[in-house]
Length: 578
Image (cartoon, rainbow, N blue to C red; front, side):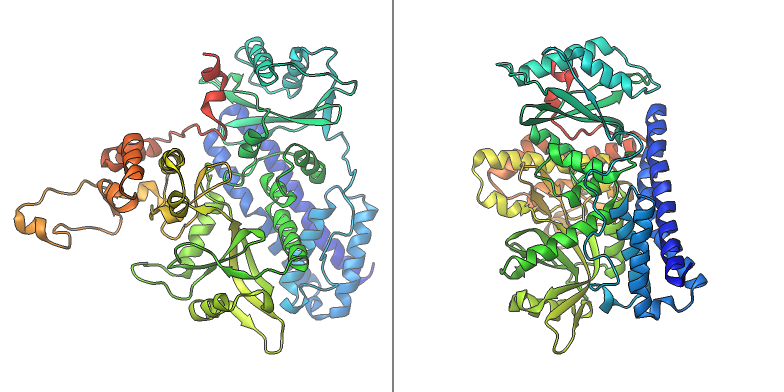
């Protein structure tokens, strides 16, 4: 073997080790679900986040120790890439797109940044994943003979062979049949190709296992999601059936923990998911199934493609300017780009390291559908002529350490940034909302705060400008620099003034520690007067009482994990058919 072949094989061995461990973690997820080991579920989700970087570091160490100086030989890396491609074809690799991304990650650690977009790495995929399949088919097909799908769904549910057994499978199948009839009140025409297709592996997240499928009927594709839960004795029950695209979109959100799912051929799973969630970019779908590095790769390629086919300018994001981040956006692209400032305005008491730790905390924590997921990038080059002068001046003023402007170059490199889905800031949303939408938004705001508390998260800064509204009207938190665990806070009532002099003071007359929180101040300082504040107090008045927060802390410390569902409670069978 040649030197280039040896290095290529070493990198591929590193990836194969990574994906083997990734699959094992996903297989163990079923055992944890069957055992009701919810703390183990949360811990495995956190541990999986760092697995990729650990394997990359090991692969880099293997190459540098076995082949000293390899990272400095330009011509060698052309040959390494060619040999790597040959190895992927030779073994008919089942995860070639992910293996290519792993190669890029290793190469970028070994090569200088100026080589990022050249022939030494995979700027675009080389090996096709179309029609790639594993040793077993990715999904199973069921062919009901009539319009009654009860037997087909019985076969689907029993086919996963979960050890727990069902609480009352016939009852649940009756609920499924009834829900389908209600979804199609006038019935439906059954075409000759009618079939139910179900992914071979269950999708595990938190306390639920999801059956993911689709119905093919003529030219139509109908999504089918069936969440399975456990009762107090560990017996299974069908919580609901999701047939609506909006409900499916809420399940497939990056605002929650990534799914655990065993996939021999991830591209086949992503293709299947894309057919039932067509508005979701494949970058997001890869991320949803735990392959966030592949998601980042696809996102970056999509961004580069968009820049080549657009001409608008990056500008400062609308809304109140942040005291920690410079935030900018591109009107034609649905994301915001966030750069940590070199210095923070008072009263912010933090530094870059603390902010980065907060974002890492969010990445590893269950976001319960109420915190925006972020993509973290280093050394991203932007065309200098696409940066608005006001934006560039703001970056040069507030974050000069994060800019690399090479004289004579047509690019500006930002050394570190976060990228998030663009949302409408809640304060701006309320300014233009009618009374009904104000009520819905304020209700959602309080729900978001409550659900975060149940996950042991206190946003810190509860100002409306730090929350955004999704296209489905869901309110999501996205400013993390003051975020902390709920159990770190001390919730207090404001002491009664001792005399008139105390009451007239501009500053508190009593001692206030850094972690002290006074909820009774929330309505005055957070919610605009008038209808918004009236709604908040009517729907979420207890959030202004320290007793509520202390009770939540006690629940968290007792290990009580709230059941938070990514779909409306009203469609749960226990509510719908009670």
